[in-house]
Length: 357
View 1 (cartoon, helix red, strand yellow):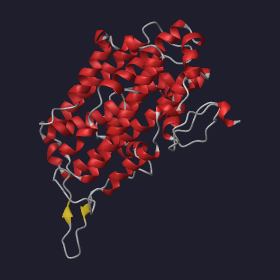
View 2 (view 1 turned 180 degrees about the vertical axis):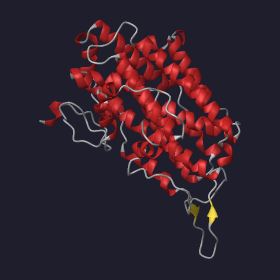
View 3 (view 1 turned 180 degrees about the horizontal axis):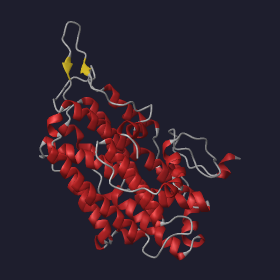
View 4 (view 1 turned 30 degrees about the horizontal axis):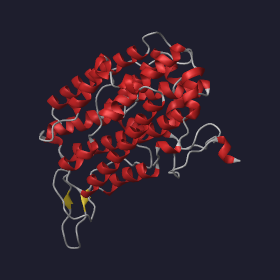
C-alpha cells in the first residue's frame, strides 16, 4: 500500500512535475490573480497553466504511426505459429482493445468546452489526434488479421457492451454541470485511460516477452500504452488543480458516486478478463496475474484521489508483471531485430532486420 504522495510520484515522474497551487502573474503593476480553470481566456499568453503544456510535448515526442511498424511476421504468427487456445485469447484481447480505440474515445476533443483556456485546447487537441492514430492502428490490425467481421459483431458480446456502457456514461453530455463533468474527467482519466486497456496490453505484450512473437503488434501496443499513460497522468494533474481551485465541487456525495462508479467499472473490466480467458490460462500468463495487475493500477489510481485502496494485492503475482511497467514507463535501448523504439518520433518508414544491411 502506498501513500498518496508516493502514488503521485509513481504516476507523475520528474518530467511531469506535481501540480501545486499557483497564481497567475499579470503585467507589471497588476496584482496576483488566482487561477480559475473554468474561466474563459481569449489571449494565448501569458499562460496560466504552462506546466500542463508538458503533456502536449510528451505526446509529440512519442509520435508514431502504424505505418512505421512491420506486421508481416505477426500475420504469420497469428495464422500458423500459435495454438488455437493462444489465438482465442489473443483475438479476444485484440477485439477488447480495438472496441475502445475505434469506437469510444472522443473525450479529449471536448475539453475546451469546459476549460476554455488556450493551453487546454492545445493539450486536448493533441490528445484527440493521438486517439485518431490509435484508432487507425487498431483498425489496420483488425483488417490484416482478418477480424473485421468479428469486430462488427461486438454488440453481441455482453462483456464488451458493458464496457462501452460505462465508458459512455463517463463521457457526459456537453451540457453537464461542472460537478458532473469533473466526475467524468476523473473517471475517464483513471478507468478509460489508466486502467481499462492495460489488462489487454499486458496480455498482448506477453506473447512477445515470453515467446518472441507478434513484434509489430507489440510495438503498436507499447506505443499506445505509453500515450495512454500520459493521458491518464494529465487527468490526475487536472484533478489536483481542480481540488485547489474548486474544492466546493468535491463533496461527500461526489466521492460516494465516484466510488460507486469505480466499482462498477472494475467489475466490467473483470468480466472482460473472464471472457478473454474463458477457455483457461495461457502457459506464460494467467488470468489471476492480469487481474492482480489491474487491481494494483486501480488501487494506486484511487489513492491518488485520496480514497482507500479497495483491492488486496498478491505481491508475488505483481512481481511477474514488473517487466510490463518497465516497458511502458522507461526509456530504453532497443534491439532493432526485435522491436523498434517508441521513445522518440521516427520517419514514416517500416523497419525490418533486412533494412539494416
